[in-house]
Image (cartoon, rainbow, N blue to C red; front, top):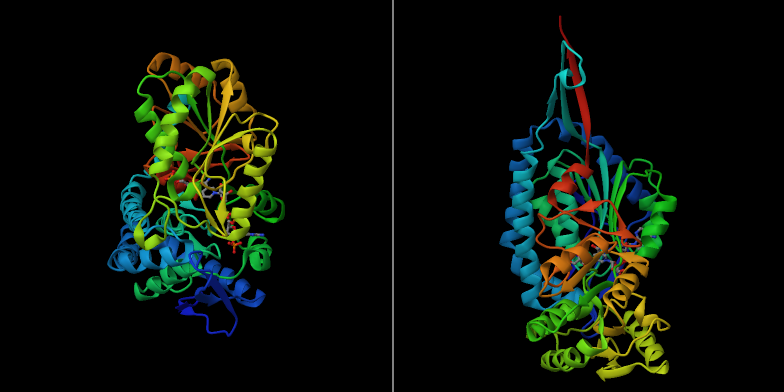
Length: 471
Ligand code: NAP
Ligand code: G3P
């Protein structure tokens, strides 16, 4: 299977290739074009040169053009899901769910774009007369969209469609593991006859072409989702300082009482182990008291033991991790905890990049697992003295993406939610980004700016005012 980068409405026919490895068997799943510096510069030039005309296209005409692209995605949804399963080892059913979720996101984006209504002001609110001001949202220009491996469809199109529908043009860099899907989407955009240059797909290994794309002077706005390290680097070398960064997470689940413990245990396991924990919003630590943990841990164990481990076509709960390097990192966190006397309740071992679902009890503050983001199928439990200490430990993290609170007392839960420093707190539910109509944001090392359909549309546009003075 091979796909090509897309620049200016054409496939890039060079002979440089980037091979994509299938995490399930370490064999080559396919290959995509690897771009040169010159080809990357061309992508930004054509994005710049096509932007004015695209921005002058009527909104409903832009939607009509983009709807053809959207419909081709729907018509190819099974193929897209199959490619995803091959290149990121996401279960076939989960891959299909991701595509369907993204089609709904696109439809919602079209509707919300129609409601970016101009703001009309007369100045009377400020004691000024004889003015009529209309403040519209206009596109920022050229958008660089960079997506991570774990949601190659949703976290790329959640950037691309809001950018295009508001009249921006896009240069899109998919993750290496996700490039087959990314480049296939590019080829579908050709079939949809998007105006040449408005949507360009640049493929190549991030560490090789990343700085070339990020530092390009044509960029007006960057929408990045990925790790803290890359996000921080991107901030330091990009010429534009206008971006949205969705980075890492260490989402805590605070379990405050033993009410509905069985249901909460199921929710916590689903939140921690979905797609083998390779989700930024995965539950990555349970904070509770000794007394509750004594009842909760056996219930978590019961649920973890039910988790099916397997390969994408079998739709298991636990799939191979994206690569062996990532699995080795998780192993170092688990081994460190074990050495410091944590108790491995279940799992803790791996075969290459197939990591067992792992439950670790008695995790303490001196262990790396208490603070670092594993991005794998491991759930640490920290036994703390009080709710006050849970809040303290939750807020001490360098991350601030989301949190969950499980409690029968909604008043107490809301009070604690207000005390947690993060983007969103889920009460009696696992942390999660969706639904995609919700604002999604993180603070501290979890990023800056806000995702979510309406917020994406606003972040990729700016106000342009026209004020009429009359007598
Ligand atoms: P990553 O290694 O940071 O890569 C993210 C994207 O950046 C990929 O497209 C990558 O391309 C590209 N990249 C790498 N080096 C670059 C550079 N120097 N300049 C520009 N782009 C560069 O992250 P990942 O492994 O794909 O995803 C896992 C991480 O992302 C985790 O930390 C997770 O928490 C975070 N994440 C956050 C969210 C959220 O919404 N907050 C969602 C998903 C994931 P290559 O793949 O070719 O290197
Ligand atoms: O890591 C991807 C992040 O956006 C999680 O999405 O919907 O699984 O919470 P979701």
